[in-house]
Length: 551
Image (cartoon, rainbow, N blue to C red):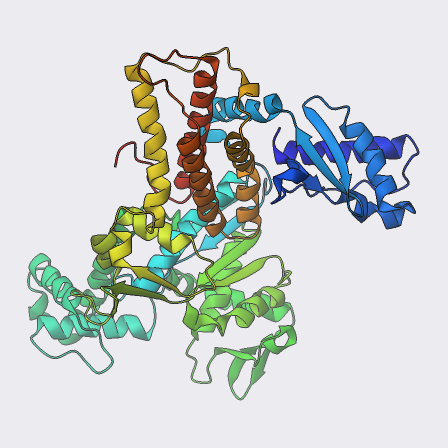
């Protein structure tokens, strides 16, 4: 029995009491069932009686007794105690707990998936770094977190579209093109331009790949560097994302918003909503009505369209393409965007607390030998995604970047993340998986397979019970990670599973030694080991991290 199933059983017990006229309350839509820290308090505990007591007009313990009486009748429930002011402590029998191992193994890759967000259409935009250089360390964090969140959301039943917004219009693209042109012609980069080996590489690729480019007039030459240089830079970003295991369904061009007239149409739509006004020759959006610190200019007095106008058109584009919730994942230097983006949604007539979410990711530092690493060989003044992969590998980078809440600054220690010790969190989890695979290989060598005559009641030690309890939490962890948009919950949970598996492995002999016979307990523990392997493999897959069979 999983915690979710027990929650439903408690809910059903309340409903039965209501139908019998013993309680006069509204049956709760959800009942919280938790695993108590002190195992003397049973396998699970619920405070449902305390929640219902006031509405029922009865003491909490009286309500608890009504619910407990029905829970005690359920198969698999060994006992139900009433503790303190009215907590219900539920103990399952060993067979009911142990049966979970079979269910997990038989479910395989589907175990943990649920329908907590079934049908919700989410547009998830992340990274979206300007295509004027390689992805830097902050973007690497969003590449890991965003892709993992997309996987988690899909596992909770949501319909997810992942998106990278290419800022391929505006001043920065002009500076990028001018920098390429300058390098190709042997001139220094313009003021405020871009430098680094990658600029030299792209400029050379263009001069080699576009014969006669340097013979063109300056303005025509610049346009080729703009279009072709941008294409090469985007291709380089796409390569890096693919090698990092990060997938985008859509690479959305800001330029298309301008070329298609979408920006002008967006301004007119917002004007119809009553939030656009003209002042001093410029066109404004009255975002202060919805919490922004000042109103925002859409079109300047000189007729130039602002970035904010493109942001408004982009949000409307997401909604027009079917997004119910638009999630923006932005860097630490974008705090000022939160209110203005939410104000766009409100001005468009949407619910700014539901239809749009803006997540801010904090900074990432990297250490080597105790010293902070700040420079990249290729980009000059930033650490790039390729640097991170070269130094610590994709698995270590993704796992470590995901395992902390995004609102916290994190430090990646290269020495730790390349070591095979328990200090390295990804190794700690992956090693548990390889340990289970090793058990299965040894069992195969001994000719031992999991018997269909599985006796779950034999999984009765405290270490087996603790491990089974952890495995039962997996669906709830995924649901919470999706609902709260916090994939780090999956990583931290996997570390708890690995901890409990290592304890089980150290205290419970799985395979016979020497001339010992194969017993029913051998088979039962093989089921449990395989169930644990399944959960860790499924969890790592949600994080885009491999589950190796050998290390």
